[in-house]
Length: 395
Image (cartoon, rainbow, N blue to C red; front, side, top):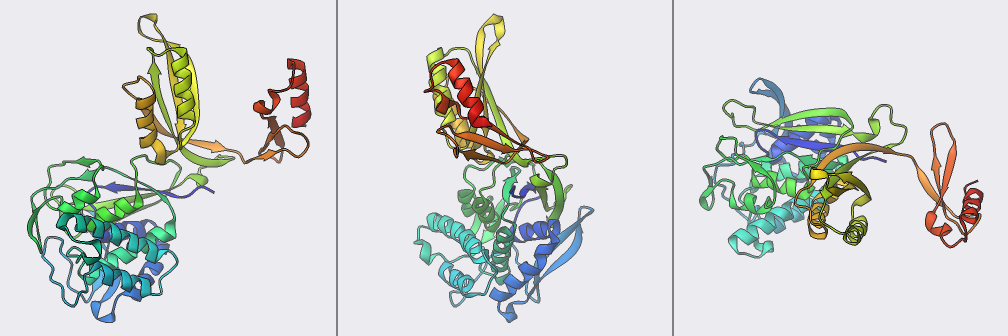
């Protein structure tokens, strides 16, 4: 069964409340679960979580926050009492609460990403980390609400590049550069862009959510089934301060008789390797994790020089590793890739009537076809013998 895919378009930035608002705007049926999970963790004195409709740069948006509690400002310093902002205390609160299935695991995982970064930045053991970014109740609320959403959706994720921002942010440690050190640590290796607008555009909580999701840059196709816009509290000059969520359902694509999947087609050309070298490279790439198929084609290049085109089908989550392997195993200095949709029919292996395995496929309309495995035919002498055995096995 194909999983939903969600693309995060980080327009203005991302914080915990923006993530929650964007996803519950795109998938409104999540709101009740989110509110119940948050209520299970938060003490009554902290306030009540709620959703608020509004606008940002003329766009209708959703916001998420606490009623009856001071607003959480990302550029304000936080002061904690009685250890309420410690990693250990927050994990204990979450684990002790009667949350929906999966919520606690994801919420604790997000907290752990934050704690590991803070421990590295400040040189303290992770268990002793005292959060300044999420010391207020509304930020703990964001972590729990995000965990609730991620658990409920069980989706694959992708994202745009991230706005760099600039300037300084005031914290309990004084003025720090933007992105904050913990944010930069968490999002090491992610793609950023400088759109000329300053301020803290990505908060540590937002960064931890993205790292936990392991969101790649490869967008999935399929039918667009939901769009949501979650807004931050700041106004940005000339653009909406939003995180946009696009929800795709590959299985809902019209006219597809089989299971829809997103794959990446990766290709490159080689004109300076021997046939033996090409064969070895193709075998190594074919055996790599995440590679679904490798095909080779003979072409004619510049000045009539013969060349070989490699074309790989790759699972989106394996793209980065496979790209690296292509550069290691071949002489290519450049790769082309694109995301595509494919439909596959249900298939099964059958070896019930002979020593020859047969791949059976269920086709639309109820028909079943079979194809014998060529490796099992290889030991049979003569072409005529192999054809006879193949025909018998496939009946």
